Image (cartoon, rainbow, N blue to C red; front, side):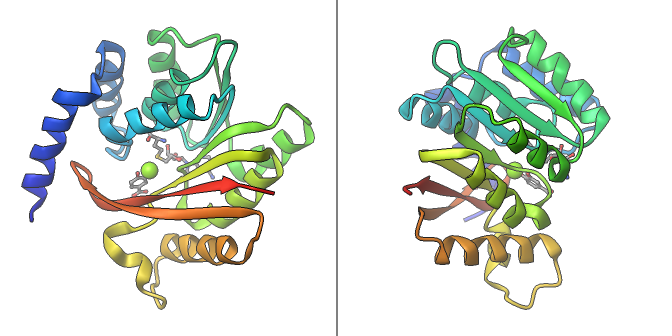
Length: 222
Ligand code: SAH
Ligand code: DHB
Ligand code: MG
């Protein structure tokens, strides 16, 4: 099994099933040309996020970590009528690229991008007492994953779904003595999920064009 084969199979899946359109293709190209890191979800993962939003009938989505808006566009397209998506991004340059990509995708009236540190933006969002989020995608700095998850629980509802990206990292997640703060952040998040009776969860390992990683799906039950 090799990266080469995983990439080839991803290309096959993309061609057969995913149906990425021009706005998404341009969003990827523009993000790359602007020098953003190549860490957006893959097309098949983006499509999965859209399908999940549709499956749960999401009308309110929160994303933590926008980058160039690639996953943002996928998820926003899975929203029901009148749906809204809030996305949080720390880097001004990423936000600028994302705003253009979101605009090009015709989603200006649907997506609200907030520039700033999610560690500050989340308490502020919580204070606004808005309608609870139906779907929350956590995909920012991995060392804060546990903190983001705890805020996510405060601003969602029973039945909401929380998806956390990059929870496997080439299998490094099983290294309890890892010196990587990101790995320790994921492990702390797993400890919280393990103990919290209000949530049901699983994690899925993935291979593909972006290597070996995985995501956690959490369903809030109480
Ligand atoms: N969800 C995107 C990829 C996000 S990459 C996609 O799949 O298309 C992670 C992003 O989180 C980067 O843009 C990074 O700048 C941002 N980020 C890192 N730390 C952050 C913080 N404290 N608050 C908000 N965003 C942060
Ligand atoms: C990284 C971040 C991501 O969100 C991702 O999907 C892959 C890699 C990173 O920070 O390395
Ligand atoms: Mg990610």
